[in-house]
Picture 1: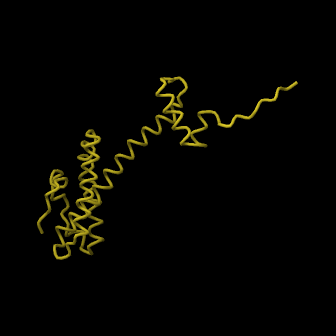
Picture 2: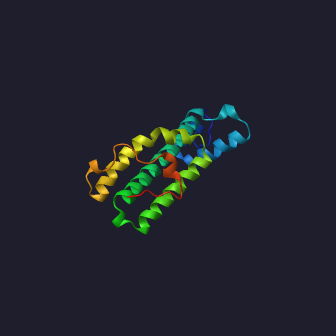
Picture 3: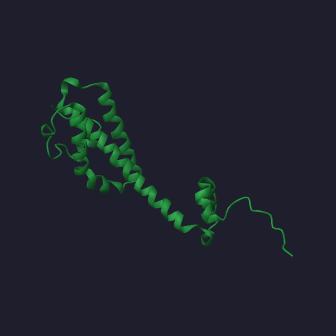
Length: 156
């Protein structure tokens, strides 16, 4: 004779990740707080932590790209300078500086991607300004310190 067992309202913990991420997250936090490490869904937890790190890096790179592009536009089209460009420069400096303050270890990553990100910004600045790509210096004319300096603006 089979014994009737009521159906569980929540799926097994490891499958909870795909079915209800927020509930999985709450349970994971609770397991960590109670030091119940054996029940952790370690594979998904590791995946989430790695994703967080990649996300932080993408945010730094994206903000740097926009900042460099606007600094180039500011430098190469002085007659078109606007409060909007200046606001964008200030906004992205604030974002990057706050991110680097919150995670100082990302400063090395910032330096590592600086030159490559400049190349992307150079292409975008060419498209946005309508100026030929060759007008923009092949190497970044600014130092990373200048780029992050809230008071620095490039000369034309």
